[in-house]
Length: 600
Image 1 (cartoon, rainbow, N blue to C red):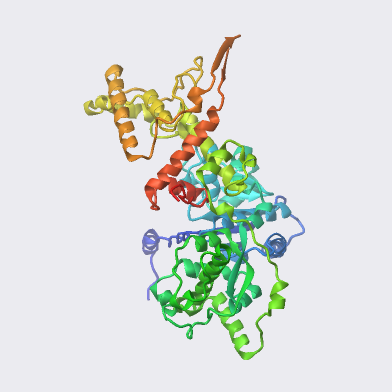
Image 2: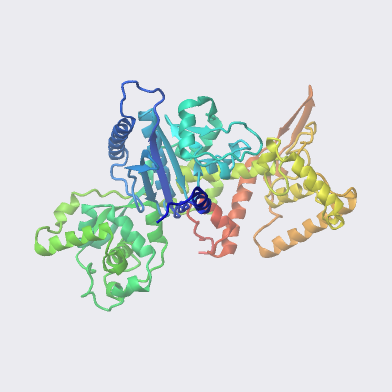
């Protein structure tokens, strides 16, 4: 065959397109550790061999750190693991973990990566999930205007426990420069001036790690449950089996339930007999999944459950029944037969049948840990929420709702709402972070000119002050002029300007629209604007002297918080268990949806 001409080769190259990298699956976190020495070592002859040797040391450190910090820890799906990989000639330590519904597992991994970079100063870590650079998502409010998702890849690193961002050559309002991994590593080695360290960004990005490593143990929940002795034997051999069993129970389908439909228990691997009560360790997410499911007992299990009037005994037996059914579905479902945990459990069961292993006796079980954690974190009532937001949780005998992290996260959300509603620079389309850095101003002017030149848009004039007043009234906040902004404060330059000079007519239209919206919201029952407000009843003392204004409000902040949270709870009630803004917000905070027990 004749050799290809240069013209043919050039044509072939022009048609070649690299295979795109597959997207990271949902609920997965991907991480890599790279060895980038700060100073070249003249004694090193083979850089590839030296890099590999350094990464092996990091791998050993990771194993030791995991053993120390995660002793007894249970992962929701997969654990933290590092393997030496080589992609495009670059040798690194890489791993991928499916964390399922347990977002805390993701942050445990981020914490481990930070600790490894502290111990090995020349190690640089990257971490992403299905949302991309999720550390930047956490710190969205503190990012510079140029750092947008389409240019963020390969710019975010963790080194010596700090967040490091690779800056562009020129920091403009809009940056289109994308960099490759090799280019990013070259900048780290040769151009340290382009490495940005921001305390504000770092604090926001790592905010969820503020209580680590103490919080690691708080991600788990221990409960006393009543199980068949054979199930207790498996859990004692390897407590991590519980996550797979809970997932099999939680994601069950008609095929998985098929073994449990019979009236007798002859065909079951885990028969409802020979019960023992043992302390079982769950992930918090897994325990909530078991407790929240309405699962009628299979016919073969009905007679084994105690009377419902013995509440504690019944709850332990019911939870044990759900867990045992989860193990039954896990073992018998054909789709699970290739899973390593299932193969391990079947080998243990075979050893029991052959006599190589024996079931634990009652005396041995009494020697096991009998820990039982408080499960009040599952329940959130309006009264406890009201008390906690007032900062008076210790005065009530009912105790605090949720855990400390849940309370702090909820109060943080309330603070963010207040900050947004009091932000006079926020446009009607939301908080405009780009304008804070002076970008897009020309484009905004062009858009205004286009709107003014279009006659049909002149009638859609917007009164921002009236809209802000209406929103504050909806949230139960005082709408009196001057509260959110002192009278001497200059109007921000980037506020949304009115599009029509005839403001009086437009103001009347906005007021009429506000009244109609208020009437509609009252009709749904989701909002009550007539409830008494401590802010309006509080004392307001305004004194002016020396050019300063002082405002004293009693109880105002507490009432704002209570009104906001009450609206959230009422929104949840209106959703009747379906998805919606309030449920999504609680889900983002990793908070369980509170039970509606007001009519019990």
